[in-house]
Amino acid sequence: MTSHLGFTIPLLAIILVAAVGTGLLFAISLVAYARRRRTQYLLISVAIGALWARSLVGAGTVLGHVPMSIHHLVEHGLDLFIAAVVLYAVYVHAPGSFTDPDGRD
Image (tube, rainbow, N blue to C red; front, side, top):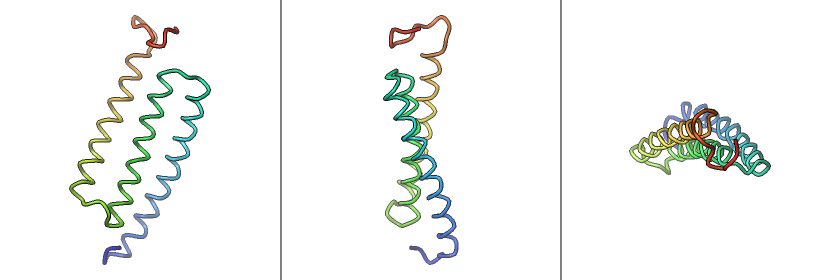
């Protein structure tokens, strides 16, 4: 760990709580997808899985395994990816004039 051990331990604790919580939400989203087998559930699972990956990258950075430049590239790239997936899911699967790609209304 870094020489800023007093700062690192609380940060790791926050990242751990985020990783556990997001991991649990990811698991629940996978169960929902397995039950429904609809594209929008898969898209939500992908977005939540990317959120979980952000926690792993954050922990890797704090522990010194992921350089800060890579951390920023990956985390901000994941932010963009998550936003795009969620917006796509809402846009394509919203009720209205667009048809559901699953063939269901």
